[in-house]
Length: 98
Image 1: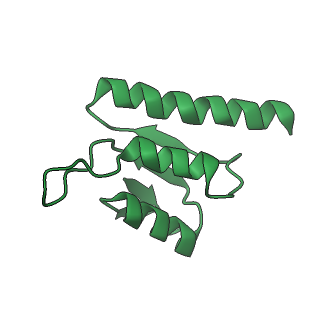
Image 2: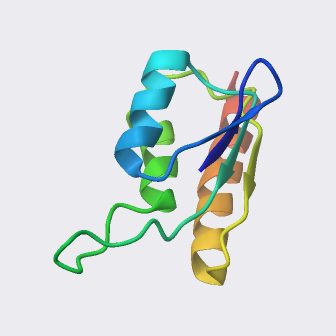
C-alpha cells in the first residue's frame, strides 16, 4: 500500500501489519493506494492481503472514513473489484446516513 502523507510524499508499506501500524500511529492519510497481493511467508502461506487491509479500515479501525480517498493499483482484477466495492459501498452508506 502507498500513502500520501501531509507533505505530499508517498509512504510505502508492504504488509497488513505495517498498514495497521502506520494508520494507528499517523492517522488516516490523504490517499491510500491499495495493492492486493502482499506475498507469502517463509512457508509459502499467503500473507493478509490488501482486501484484509480494507476490511480492517471499515470494520475494525474505528476511524471516520467519510473523507477517505483511495485508489486500487492491484493487477489482480478480482481483488481490485473486492476492494473498490467494499470501500465505495461503505462510503456511500456513510454519506447517505450521516
